[in-house]
Image (cartoon, rainbow, N blue to C red; front, top):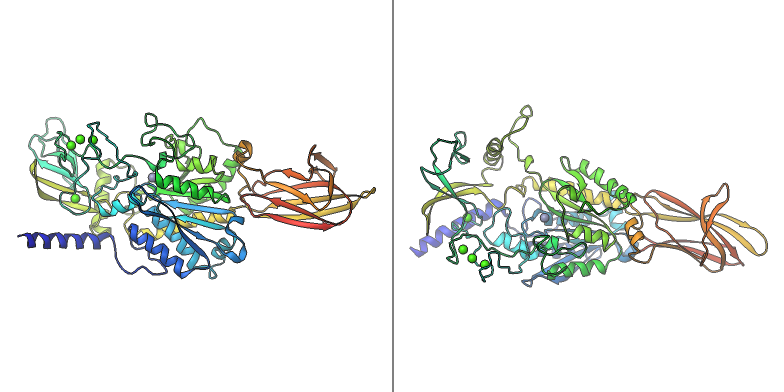
Length: 570
Ligand SMILES: [Ca+2]
Ligand SMILES: [Ca+2]
Ligand SMILES: [Ca+2]
Ligand SMILES: [Ca+2]
Ligand SMILES: [Zn+2]
């Protein structure tokens, strides 16, 4: 009997595994017709690093609550300069444990840069120009448990910090129970002539509410589970909940305002580790955090009362307005338009680390279609469910939905279990994954292209007598993103970008507002150093009156853009 049960169990495991996770040796180029569990992600990063040792650095930047490593892959071509000297692009994913395809977007981005370097001109440029910092999985415990445990598409988001949700003195004592052992937490229903639900006449799998006076067929019992602690409630205290995307430092608010905030900012050990990593890479000028779902590009601010400078909005718009064309159907908006959040990573990136930050909400369930081009118009919830089930049946070969099956529940007796599996609803079926990862990685590539690209030249030198020279310098930013966010400049977040003159005594210096009319805003003190940022697609001219002869150097230093310099012999 035991052997028989084991065999059945084994067979079930094999079937579910083959349905969603295609195992196999992990090789370069990586495959994207599969999802990588936590161990696979680590292996994939190692394989990439081993295949491209010159272009990559792989480091464990910290550990999670359960001691799993959080890995960052840095892609940089040392022949074009140190990573820290270049505009940094940071990409992370899967901060919410269930949002797994975010990790695949990061892996795809890394795989694309490395395997197409030297083959594709645009990608070669991006590798040579930028330092790329990639953390595919922030919530490593979350990813591990999403694959390993029974889950719904929406469960297992937070950090593994125990919390007593129902205040009974026990912590995480009554999670969902994967009763049928298929890896998903589905729904339970029981036959009941007095129930409030019946089968949809068109698709018996869909439960619809009975109309007044109508006879019912079923009572819905909620998600798979039992009352583990015997307190009369089911599934009332699952894992966590500490929301890793409400645990960051900027505008953090305690739990009574922001659910999931944690006891203090950066209390999540992995969150703190990622923040330390960001601090060690002050050259990061743009950041992407990938999530699911809904099809959105979100930018700061995440609360309506916070305003950011219009020039920063303009920089965001250059990426955002193009991103929505690369990912059709996505919308671009400030994140407060969705709902206000406190202590999110994107605000932390922008206000604390001075980087333009985007949230990419991957995947639209509306792409799960089963209709001809002619059919359109608003559908009811039930109509939409019918279509999604047809999509499951005819396009996904039944792999996204578990048919209702009898189960003997320890408390309720004969029930049925069925519904959408954990790899559905917010995550594309693997046949749709390649397009999703490619389009979204292309948005990051678009951002790479727009990171600042500065040039400097001396365009006019005149001897004006008394051992004095008048020197005019022009600096250009040839790309759309500023060398420093206007917000960081305003907040004095760090030492401002500056033009420095060395090699001779500078008597006067300032911004040339009109070189034809010789109009200059001279700076009163220390004219040899001029503080200013270089906005996207901009040009500025400065004039210096310099005493003496010799080689004079003009150097524009920026924390996030690549420094540029030129010199002139007087
Ligand atoms: Ca409890
Ligand atoms: Ca199950
Ligand atoms: Ca309970
Ligand atoms: Ca309890
Ligand atoms: Zn998320």
